[in-house]
Structure formats: structure tokens, C-alpha cells
Length: 303
Image (cartoon, rainbow, N blue to C red):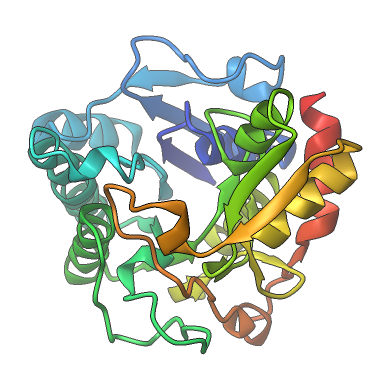
């Protein structure tokens, strides 16, 4: 297969390209930078075909994809800075990337007749209650600009493309960019005590594991909406922080606090990020490993 991947300078796109190379698939990567500017780790993604693509430019998207004629597109590119998305001066840009850019990708995929995989988020829901959200639940109520624009991206994919996968994930961590683990490790070097919220609950997702699953999926015709995080149950950010410091061998005291006690952020965060993953197994896909195992492997990787 020939698979076109957007957003490969980010943590998930980077891992998807490496997974394609590992399987001997033909991958073409794109991002906004003139040359590949993701993590320089000597892996295959650093040498695979790359081209600059601004997904907000409809004509550029159409020209590049029609020229490439991929069998599938894995659309990882997105505005993911949740708090910055709330700034009035950024909101047009967020919408241009997450909504219009996704629509441009979807329109080109419809014209080519190829598969499209769109990476989405638990933020399309309202984050209330304690029950895990099912993939086909349509009780959407995003709490912030990021969630609203990702939902509208989903809607564009469903409207325009017949052969689509929508994969919602949460609490992602990988090599490129920043994430909760890197933040905890950095703060733990200078702060003997940290306050971490314990009333926001979900499951971490290692992008290396998720990339494997995404390529498993794109090689099939089992289209639809899926939820994908690592296994191992649902935890709070406090639980996650405690396990990070335990595995890293760092003596940091972690104090559990409520979201209200911690302080209001610019973007409202969901309390319930539980995603039901049963549909993966029902569809014949191998679930992701336990998040504790994923954390162990990740800490070794970033040393």
C-alpha cells in the first residue's frame, strides 16, 4: 500500500511513518515545515519521502494528493494546543486547521476514492459522569474550542468519505513535542512536591503502540469509529504522576487536588475521559498493551 501521512513532525505522525517503514509499506509524509523537523532519532522517518503541505490550502492539498494517488491517508495533522486554542486571536487558525484542513483532506480522498483515517479525541464529549463513552455514542458536547473543532473535523470526514476510520484517543505521549510525562520529569527535578489533579480520569496512550494499531486498521476495510488507548484500566492524572515517579526512581511527593483546587485553565478540561475500547477486539484488532508497560518502555526510550 501507498499511505500518505499528514503531521509527521508530531509525536503520532512520527511513529506512524516508522511503523510503515518497519512493515515495508510505502509512506509519504507531510507537515508544515519546509523540511522534516520532527525528532531526529536516526529512525526511518528521517529518511522517508517528505513534502511540505499546508492543509489549510485547499488547492495545495488537492494537487499533492492527486499527484501522490495514495491508497490511504492517515490524517494526524491538527492544532492540539488546547489552552492556546481558547485565545480569540487563535480561533480562526484553529478552525482553519482542524475543520477546514480536514475537509480539504476528505474532499481529496473522496475524489481519489482512497481510505481516510482521521485521528480524533475524547474532547468531542462533555466529560461528565463516570461511564466510558462508546465509539458510536453521538451525545457530543465539547467543552472547549479544540474539542469543538475536532468534532467538526469528524463530521466533515463522515459527510465526504465513504471509506473512513475515525480513531479517538486520549492522553497521548511520544517522542516528539511535549507531554505530561516530560512535564512531570522536568518539574520533578526542581520541585520536591507537586500538586496533580485527581478528579480527571482516563487512560494514557503511547503513540508508538497506537501507530501499530493504526497501521493494522488501515490495512483492512473494517471502517467506522473506534476508541483506542492503552489497556490497564482508568486512572487519574494523579495516579499517572505517581507511577511516572515510581518507575523513574524519583523521590517526589505528589499531592492529589481537585481541578478547582488546582486552578482554572483557559480551556475547560473533561472530568471523564474514559473511552470504551471493546470495539477494537470485537473487530479483530489487537488491543494496545497495559499503560504501565508502555510507560516503562517510553522511559527507557527517552533516557
